[in-house]
Amino acid sequence: MKNISTKKAHEAAFSGGSVSDAPKAASCADMAPPLSNRGGAETEAALSTEQETFEKYTTFLTDSKGRLIEVPLRRGKANSAFIDQISFSIHEDTFSLLAGYPLVADDEYIVRASMVLADIFGFGITEKAKHSGGRFYDSCWLMGTDNAQYGRVHFGGQNNTMLIEVTATGCNAASDGWESRLYNFILQAVRPKITRIDIAKDFFQGEYTPEQAKADRLAGKFTNHHMMPDGESVGTDWESNNGKGKTYYVGSRESSKYVRVYEKGKQLGDKESQWVRFEIEFKAKDIVIPFEVLTVPGEYFGGAYPVCAQFQEKAKRIEAVKKNLELTFERCIEVAKNQVGRAINAAKSMFPHKDRSEILAMFEADHDLLPKRLSLEVYSCTENHATAIHDKPEGSLWLNESAQVLLEMAIEQKNKMTKLIEAKHEEDYLNLMYDRYAYRF
Image (cartoon, rainbow, N blue to C red; front, top):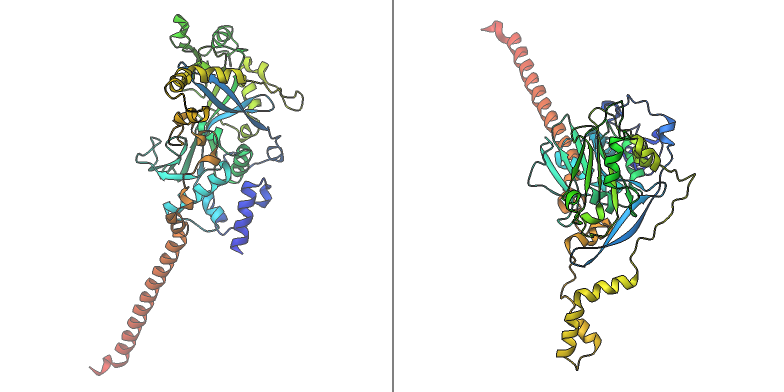
């Protein structure tokens, strides 16, 4: 019976099931704290929130050395606003509910968390970090590889919670639809809280710039509650116009909202790029970040500041227009010629008897490695071949560790009770014998 209820809990958490599908029959349900930080008042409106859809596409840049860089991106089809980074915390009892029995071993909590994350994002926990992670938890666990750091999991202490941080690389590489899966999971979790979320929007043709952001702040278009936030211009490009890129910050890094408007293309090395990214960082300091931000991030981007309202478009009203940002094939050939053209000419003159295929073979590397920032796992978790901890041999052992510990505790308790009963029986027998024969002495 426990297995059936556990299966239903798992399906409700990840397949979009309703709250009524939650593990009501789980044996540890009675001990669980409230299911949300809203007092448990989940509404039908929250569950029926319109899900914004996302798409992946590609743009190309040329760095300062003339190298062609392909940059896979994602955007919301509704308005091109997307989640670029997220951190959230949940109570550890969430994993006891999913397991169907109380967990007591820390290692099993980590294995269970890895399984959940793999279901949501497409990647799990790979190893324990050598450092504590700097978030005031006892331990830190890593997701991803050295080339592609997807995020971190912090556990131990902090009121029995677990903090999960997914980086921009992790959000970009995660399996399609992770936003809705995370939303469904959070609705079923114990005491969930989004602690930080970054929502971004890209302008590829210079439709919005750091200079415009500076002017808009001074014009009051970033002003909420009659208080103009601070502004800061960063980058030598503001004075020297050297093509290294400008950044403009609005607000304080310690506040609940912080804006970065920067020239993303120039940051990646393309001095002629017009690509600008407008990024808003929300932190749960003096605000509560609603869970619905996972399903319609564009709406929360549009409502963050007065200036953002002009960028908000809804998919049901306006069809998103795909922008063709790829360089032409001729440009690709031009870059290749600039990089290796002279070396090929030298090889042809030195080895006139070799044909073109043999000349090309001379320039092929004897390995299949890619530059770190172009590693395939950076852009898709399906290319991540690092074994998740729940798929490792020790993970299988840890998975049942809590059950084993509970069994051992039960056996130990039974042995103690048996000894107490035996001792009581012996004491009662001695007292009986004393009462029966003491008068004879």
